[in-house]
Image (tube, rainbow, N blue to C red; front, top):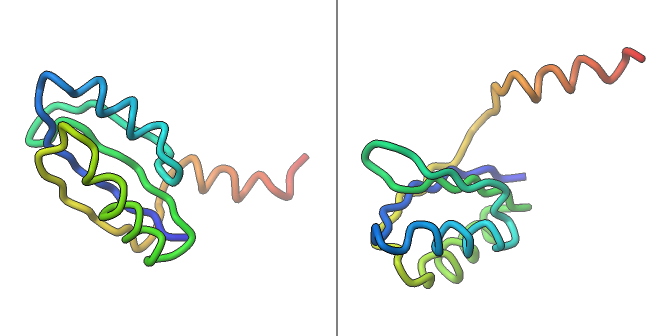
Length: 92
């Protein structure tokens, strides 16, 4: 499984529309409207790098209103949620 964080600059008049289209895309698990340098952050989870490349170049960047993007591939997850789930497997 490949996890990527995609930071997006979006036409300000289309933020909600772009966020809705992103969240409906297969492989995109979450979309956040954020403050700061970017307008939206999309969390992407795909089975491999090829599927990630297809999603980013084939689908994401063809959505009207996206001005630019920066994709960061996650090496490891240190999520408290993931760690709690892993340690609760044996309890019950």
